[in-house]
Length: 262
Image (tube, rainbow, N blue to C red; front, side, top):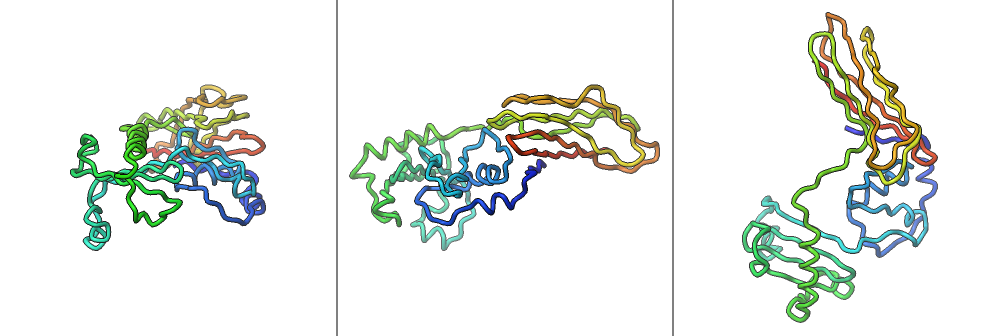
């Protein structure tokens, strides 16, 4: 688990928010980037979310998504839900919103690799038809096809993540263990004054093999430190905690990771 905290706390974010409404489509994926920006903490650069912090602070200059892609592949709908969705609730589906247009398509089977002619496509103009009651796919087939192509471009079969924050690995047995800790900058901005520290229980001895500091970590870079930990001969299983700290703009950010020692 990685915990992000900001040295300025939450009061700064609360005091800077402005009341208001917006028509900007804001998916749940925007929350991480938004909360991180409000707290003065970094967010991973490889997530789809965009921060709406400028909008919450009263600025109209807030990034917008070119399109929003949705995928559904669950089989746990109730009979009532399925009936309300005209029998489509248990079918694999995907959708894409681009501007005011939203395309939805339902697979006749449960394979996303089915050819396009084995999907049922619908198209809606959300500005005029927010309830999605008037299907425009037959009247505007070119637009429907264009949004289906964007669905293909939006799908990724795998999602390899860029390392972010602190990770810690403990190897060994008996009383001597080797600890490898890494602080990775997976954000889009440089971090300064990076440092790794290790908390050990009372009676344990830690020996660092190299300095666990770095003046600067650019995006994609990491700081790794190796050390040896010795525990008393009579000791129960415990947890080692590693802290990584760095400067992110005007804030100091702390990331934490734990590893069990048995």
